[in-house]
Length: 170
Length: 224
Image 1 (cartoon, chains in turn blue, cyan):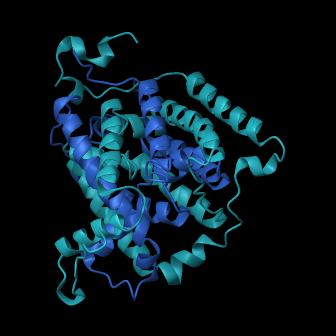
Image 2: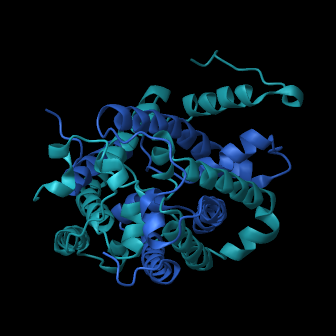
């Protein structure tokens, strides 16, 4: 019988194997990244002219690479959630949001939109995200990734402390 | 494959045409076949889903210091990969792709990223995995992200590029320990793995997920 959850250390070993495969010349000879596809998708959906906006030309290659990878991520995530973790269900508000923030779907959706917006601005300003900087960058011992990782960790925990109401709750 | 060319007339190219163009870009890039890149995505999404690290309770839970699976798994991944990658690059089996130290961009971007990661409870890699398992609120977050990407693209030259500042180089840790590069890489990797193990394990479970599993299969009912 297959387990429905994978322990963190098995996940870490598998993710490391995937990163090494992707980096290797027998794989993709590049790092894994997951935030460049967003402006690429924005240009694709809103039909922006690459001759007018230099950033589109700038991200053409990594953006399209990550775009194809994203299609795989959606497929892999869907199949795993249906057949292995059995966690597929439609939902508008996470259980943890109800426990530590509020019960309002409108509040959750507005905050989601807002945080999604600034998340991509932030990732593109820094030149990467959890995948590109934290995982791929730090694995190359990159100083840029260590600075980003440190700033994100501190800001994440400070925001968690002041944005949510955790007092007296398990 | 060189004669496979998607002729796209810009004036009335549809979104579908542009998706084909995206696939064609990957074919011409020499960073793995389209099938391999897709497969990397499938495995990436599968690992994230299977370990449940895409969950709000895991990421926002870490922000509230009520769940530590994210840092444990991240640090273990980095520690293992850093040692393996260092020697693969040394042997010519892989290359460096180091991002520049753009101090202002890293700090301002990191602050915006940390705030939004705590609120959304996702990042750009884990978000799609949650959307794939039916989380509508994350889809709304992704639409917000698309507009973020749009604004960044539109104002890149005027606002964001100057805000990122100049690059101070693409240094890596071993640059500061000349003569002891191998040892520096190994020590870094081992220390990061030890941090992953040393972080106390705390878990925040989501009852709404667990009740879809049979009673004896729920991870919160088992001692690990």
